[in-house]
Length: 300
Image 1 (cartoon, rainbow, N blue to C red):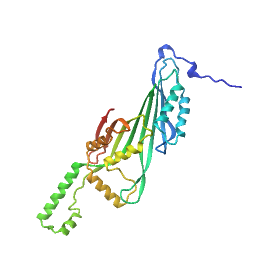
Image 2: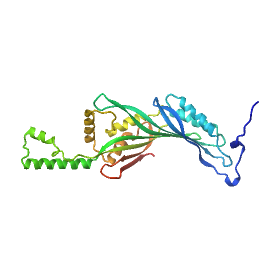
Image 3: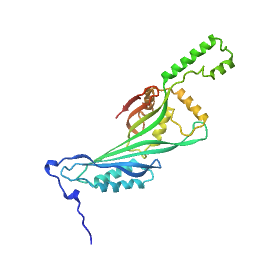
Image 4: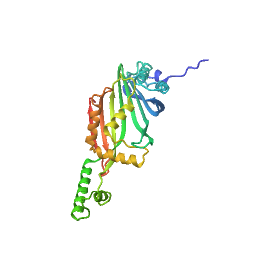
């Protein structure tokens, strides 16, 4: 015996007074694992379709969920795979919806080596992959957050100035002479290095409009290129020799937030895998209680 159960969404219609098309209807924070860059990424996924029929009671949310499950079976998720699922969303809502969207909120874990020693550790990079399909028009956007260190050029100049003044005073007071070893010994004292530049944890929030024809999602490529551009990526496991190398990297890459943004701009302008970008860098000031921020975009 086949039991026929009622489908309220299909059988019910709204009174005219309440008949309105809706931009998006669906589900948020669906717990699903996906594989991106051959890495398993536990994710929170949002899935929506538009409700274009003003008299329809609602959409079929279970149809969205069952089609999302297809993404968990793919070993290396591509834009083509997501586009295929979005097409299934619309096919399963024919007559109801013309617009579909998937948002994948997750983190990518990458093992990173230390700068000098043989140590290594893991870093996480939060990202959001958002894809939409409107009839035959597909759009994909990728947002990734990258932490790095920034040393203020102004504080570096002020610290050097203090050290120069201390050196001149020590010479004038005959605390030291121009003997090489005396100078080397003096430079190793707190009297000499009386000031240091201030550095801060900083973040690059990168939004990319992806070329829909790319074969895979170039998340690791973007992360690596951004870190190579900034030159001061935060570290994981370190020995003292690595910490010293990190201090050198900061000293050789003094950056205001404007400098950091311009470095990223130069790296990704006219990039072959993207059609546009919108960037924000945040220097979480160690001098001030507020943050220094710069924003920039291209074809956004």
